[in-house]
Length: 161
Image 1 (cartoon, one colour):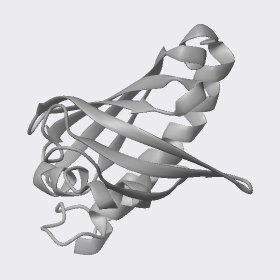
Image 2 (tube, one colour):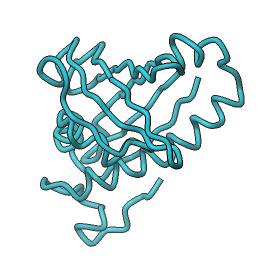
Image 3 (cartoon, one colour):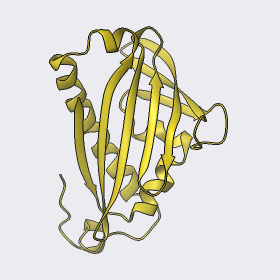
């Protein structure tokens, strides 16, 4: 199981504003070239978004479905990636003083990914999550909203995890 965390120098409401916009997933999800709403009203349970992944010259299309939506704390998704199968992606959003702690937990759920799940795959996901959470933090921290008191936007040092 690949679990990582990121401290974001914004209030949880700003994090949620980014997570609730399906068109913004391509800004922070590693490998996603485009994302758009598909079925239902994102991020209600059962709603979905579509995305395009680029791996070198190849493009793959996928779909992500909301399985749990309990703001301001939980967003759980199932990302369907065709032949690779699907993965559970859980975002645990916690207020951390004036900042937000985001805990990302992802693991293969169905199909090929679930069948070959091993330590090597978890190591790959750890690297991917480190980049993805940094990108999410950047998107959130550059979004309109009140920065946390110690963030670089307020002249503080920030923590840069």
